[in-house]
Image (cartoon, rainbow, N blue to C red):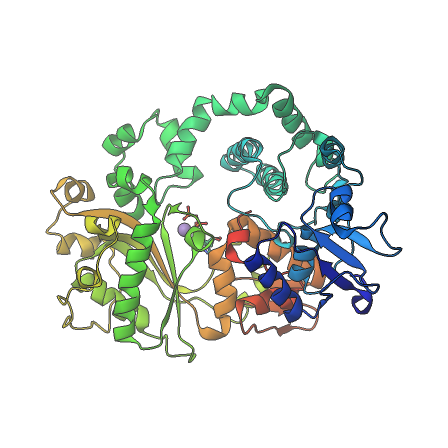
Length: 516
Ligand code: UTP
Ligand code: MN
């Protein structure tokens, strides 16, 4: 950080929209960054949207910059707001000298990569970025490594993903390998793949995997609800190459697999935001009737701004700790009474104090948590695909559904009885007005809530990185349940989502910027 007291910022209003300027000024005020209304002698940092110093100087009517005054891009200001204090000036903050655009391009082609913060949780990673082509290739290699068993492959998979995350956070499209050379997660192998895409538009290594029949089958099979790499591998070994074959031949498997296969086609059709919003509204309405002040939050990809997702993740809590007990079974009884549950499994909480610090090992399953939750498939009325009126959403039927206090779960056996002995395939084949959607319902006690919110918002990679960061930088164990200081053996409660970031000393990024 720069010495805060010496920094006085002048924001050149030209080329900045009024409203945006107002927001910038308010943000500065909030974080005690001193602003000057005009260019005075005490100004140390001039921030501008002009692309070259010549343009800016002309407007400022200066022939040269006063000593100790820096001319900077707006990104210096936004970085400072994120850090809540003026940050040290880095190469990417400086306005190129001179007037030719060519010159400015030359510069941006080889910025030193040391400006890329080490962990993805320290970087803004938007959903839409400048390097789709490269990231798609790197994540394909990640996928492939992940499908192959063994710790080595798992580490390889993470390495591809971390490299992809570096590219996702760049504010420009990669045009020259030097732009990322030397960054922590860009190793020689990654460089080779990127260079090949830069030179030829594709990489042989990537294309080879893309065309590998084993990879193609694994990609389809591992997407089936309930199927992991092991099951997918087993299907391939049985000589099956299409879902249809698996549907016809495979008779084993738990309830997930049986329903996952029977409803495969519609489960593969992604859930839209409209459906997610309608369902969330519906659940909020039902939940409020059961337990006033219960909080319902749509998490996962949707909270990060995605417009489609493979499932809907809803996180519940109640501000009075303990009030959440028994809520989920009640809600499930209501859903069951309204005939909205196709299948699912309710798991009680398995949380123990020990889980606070023993789960931080970097294993494949480090995303698993101990919350009480329900994982299953809900029957979505087809009308939920469009915007529906409140009346339609909250029809009165079911209002007097008796609550079944001892709601256990809807295991296949029980379910079978309820559906008149129909198999999942038979249910799928019946004429029906609903569509199957994967839903996760998670209950967090309030004292763990903000950690669960971060955890269930993701992305998965963001979680991995912020947890590694917590361990390496502070010797903290971080999970969806909390933050635990392993040195002092105490847990660190957070009072808000931002509080989690504050405790870690990581700049707060809103969910939309956690798409790593
Ligand atoms: P998802 O697998 O639903 O991912 O987990 P997503 O980002 O929402 O992707 P789409 O849009 O559905 O395809 C949501 C978040 O919840 C965490 C994951 O790490 C992810 O960040 N999660 C998932 C847990 O914390 N625990 C779990 O048991 C499962
Ligand atoms: Mn999700």
